[in-house]
Image 1 (cartoon, rainbow, N blue to C red):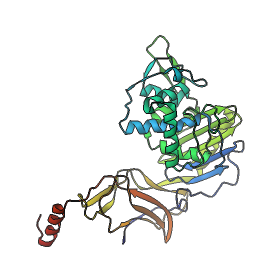
Image 2: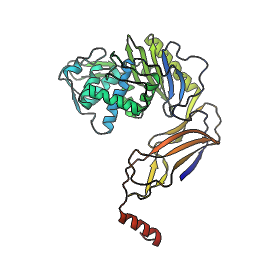
Image 3: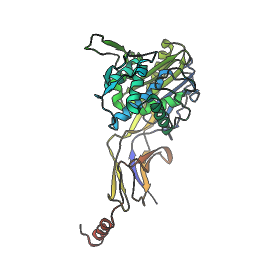
Image 4: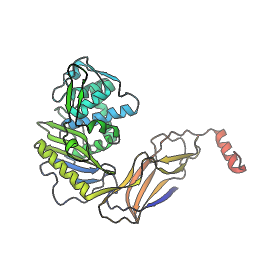
Length: 386
């Protein structure tokens, strides 16, 4: 039996029934010179604009978004720390293209390496970090492809960690938006991607001046990432993100003819999103969502709190009536339950129509209670004693 706890709010939306939801497309091509493009609401995943979004193309250094994602996940998991030393191997130092000119045996911290990747697109720093986390670039690439599959990036295959030209190394604008959206869940990444200029080896005899390859972080209000890319095959590429108020968007363009056109078309995508749409928050990060009973659990209940913001995308000026959401779950949910296990969902309605659904995962592991715990719990109910 499903239980539904209903909540109401004075908001409205007609966009975003699921993760693949698409807003009504604009009448004009916002990225006419791009080979492929997409504009996405970062919070809901709603596609606002797309052009050849599933075409498989070489991503150049936009590859490093996945590299940075795995670095941030390793930091979150405690596998590495920002101040950990990273020693440069001969292989890492041999990388060509964009680099921070690491020397064999040179040591930098994880923080410095990440700065070199995010700002200067360091191919050498990317390999050094891959070796730090996985032991080798090949092992790290396997992690990249496994994570891509977990995220539903079904038109992506990575061959290296930095995007240097390689056979069978490809992705799509849509898949890039998906991994960009995932990276932005680690908000600390913007402390690297939003900085326009900085130094490495600042107190050494050979300080290295970093200038962000993404000029929009300086020249577009609200822009704070993410990653540029260029090879002769891929042309000029960019996955960019900008936030105003509580509304964050991600714009991806691939195959642009030059940096000026690339930046102008991403600016046009951003301008369209911020002029036409807004993101209305339903549940704030940390807000209580509800309580779920667990049959025969060592803990009899799971107290749910939002681990991220839940919202709906709506056009500016749209009606703000008749929206509500429900927490639905199985009344007969039984232990054991693993952390991350899907245990219910939030369904958002406008009137009788479903706008979108969010899966709810268990924030804790719950083991099956011992027979003695169950007996005491039963006795408590029968005799009203603790």
